Image (cartoon, rainbow, N blue to C red; front, side, top):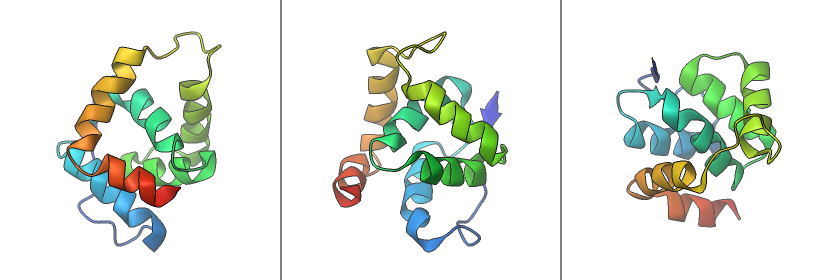
Length: 108
């Protein structure tokens, strides 16, 4: 299943719009299920649990509380199905094509 994205970032807080635009450029047809958890982990490298949850709530329409817990699970080494380095690197490479490195540097 693919999680569809809104057309614009107008209703999103201004400080989260660059993140939304990077996600939309990377996944123009929506966030695929297999990219969802690695995306959360990668966004967490430059954002807090709360801000990741806010932007992904906006992107996917999933409830904030659910996304917040998904972020925790995505970065937890004791998760029932921890992410593999390959899963994370695959999504990182996709994001890099749309400014991930600059986004991460700006977040620091």
